[in-house]
Image 1 (spheres, rainbow, N blue to C red):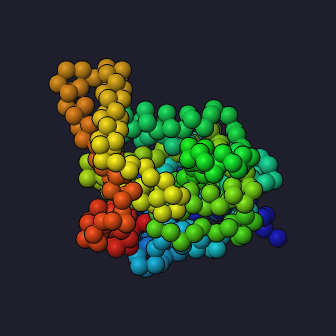
Image 2: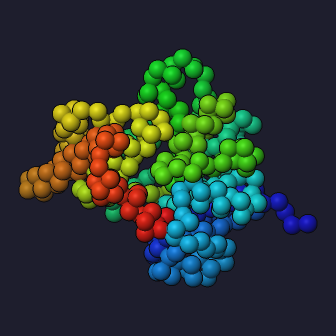
Image 3: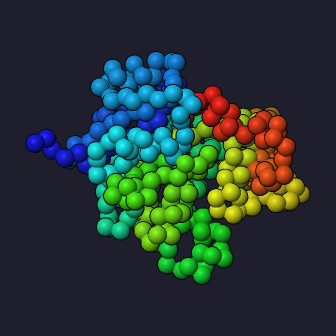
Length: 326
C-alpha cells in the first residue's frame, strides 16, 4: 500500500497570476520526512492559473465563481484531500523556506488536544516599510517560541475582548488543522473571517491552538485608501456579527484613532531614514490610509444601520463575491 499522506496543502485560487507559480514552487520544494499532497480549488480563473498548477503536477478542482465561499470552498478542498493534517494557505502566501510545512504540521501535532496551528506572515520584500513593521509587531505579540493556548479563564473570556481576540486569532493565510477536528468542526459558511470564527468555536469546545513562529509565509497587501476602507469595513462588520465587537463605535474616536496610527507610521518612517519631502509625502499618504482604516471600522460597526446601496459599495468582500473571486 502507498504510504499514508501526512499533510494536504489546500489553496483556493482565482486569477493567482505569476505569484501563484512562485507559491506552488515553494510548496512543492518542501522538505518533509513524510508524504504530502497539494490541491488547488479554482473558482473561475481566466489568467492561466489552472494550467499553471497542472503543469506542476498539482491536482486542480474547478468550481463556478458563484459557488465560492471562504469557509465553503475550504471545506470542499478538505473533503477532496486525504491528509491527517489540513494545511491552508492562499494564492499569494509564499512559504519562506523549505521547512515551513514540517514546522507547521509538527506544531499542530505538538499536543493531542491541539485543533489547529498558525504561523506568522512577513511582508513581501517590495511592501511598504510600514507594512513590514506592522506585521512584525502583530506576530511578535504571540511570542518567539512555539506556544499552545487554551481557554483557561472563562470569566475573563466573557468580559475581556482583548483576551478573547488573542485566543481566537487564526489566519488561513498560513494555518494547519487536524483532520479529526475538522470533521467535527468544519469551517462555518460565513461571508468573512471563517478562520477566526472556526478558531473561536474550537477554543470554546476545549481544544488548544498553537502558534508556530518558525512556520513563516510571505504575505502582505499594500492596499490603497479606498481598498483599506473596504477591507476594514468587512472586518469590522464580521467582528460585530460573529463576535459582538464594536471596533469603532463613535466617529470622533475613530478619527483620533486614525491620527494616532498616522503618528505611529510617521515615527516608523523616520526611524527608517525617510526625511524631507519624501517623509512628508509618505506621511500624508499613510495618514489617509489610517483614517480610511478607522473610517471603515466605524462604518462596519454600524453596518446594520447603513442603506443597502452603501453596503454594496463599501464592502470589498461583497464585490469579490459578486465577481466570484477567491
